[in-house]
Image (cartoon, rainbow, N blue to C red):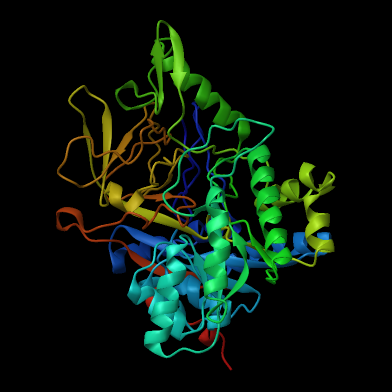
Amino acid sequence: MKCQIIPLAGSPQVAPLEADRIEPLLGAESSALLDTGLLRQLVASLSSPLNVLFPERVSENVRPFHETFEHYGIDGRVFLTTKPNRSSSIVREIACSPTIGVDVSSEGSLAAALSAGVPPSRIEATGPKDQGYLSLALLQGIVINVDDIAEIDLICALKKKLGIAEKTQILVRLSGFKSPRNAFAVSDGTFGVSIDSIPDLWPKLHAHTHEVSLLGFSYHLNTDSIEYRVLALEQTLSILFAAKQRGYTPRVVNIGGGFRIRYAKNTYEWENFIVRLKGSITGQGKACTWNRSGLGFSTENGRIKGSPRFMDHAEPLPPADQLCALLRQELPSFSAVPAGRLLSESVLELWIEPGRALLDQVGLTVAEVLSVRRSEQGHPLVVLRMNRSNLNAFELTLLTDPILLPRKFSAEPCDHGYFLTGNLCVANELLTPRSIHFGQRVAPGDLIAFANTAPYIMDFAESPTLHQPVARKVAVWFREHETKWALDEEYRPYLKEEL
């Protein structure tokens, strides 16, 4: 496993070693920043770890989705999901992008979106809701995505208490899709209205017909199965048309997110790692992970069992193409009409909430090397000035090679790998489960950058564990031959340019 090396300006290149690697896919912004030397200045000023964000990249990620809507003649809306990253600069950038909405999932994230300047008409409130969250959403006239039938009663009670006469637009989040054609093994969910409970929805809506307006239906899936995605869309549309027959006027189908992104630059390198990982746990080859972990795979009677505890790093289809693949599917319950055509001809709006896909290549995380030492069993370790809460992928382990930015050029090659560890005083404080080959020796004061950490990694589970600091954030943008930056909390897209 061999990693990229970004030498200091003017330093000669180190000849690459022949070793296994999972080179990360780098966006243009990340590549440009790594070539400037600015990261070292930022870390020197703001300490380590440091999260770098490219807010303008979000608009680039949204464009292919809008092009897909246009291709199919669909009235579509894209909502940035705020939970994958707590950056304020990204939300401020969205506030100045009228074609993008914001999906919030807490009172705090709703307040942050409003404070950033996002108008209420472009916000959708999702997730579990207490009275404070619901009250703020109601007072601002936000679309509310209901995930429990009893929530409708709470909405109406709060409206009466707050003196709100205008109707509140709601989506009803569905779950528990069942197929008459296939038996799907799908994990249980913690919220959403089961389709088996839809008969209970109609009298509830009828009882509150003057308080709420049914805007449409939504769902969110955690499966890669295109068959199950077709089933969910098909059954959601069936329920929507049933609502129309009952006199309601729903017009929105919100299919959530779940669009996968690519982390590895080379498919062969990724597949080679999977082969070596499985070989390692069966004893056929050199160990490539800490304590020969199978990362979800194990052996029983000489056979491999289990499933990976990591995401596919070499997704072949870009996110918008994944949406196209769904819209091309024929819906059996609708005379095999393709999904995109049915949505278009029925004059329905298609909403999506692609959290990970909109943050693809929007940021990276960099940390300083504290020390280099050996483990109890002699494995070379690199200790970084960061910890695993600063790089927590939440069950989706990041396995691509980090990038070494040496403080001083070293002509001395290094043919062994390193395990990267953090600064917490706990056992197995690992940042990478793989042994990483940098091609040269790592030394204190070097920097190591982790690519594409903006979605669900850099701050999703971050905490000041053992009084270690959380990472500062900076926003970076490029103008002609100049690289500019601002603290994340001070980034104002409308002040980036001189008037």
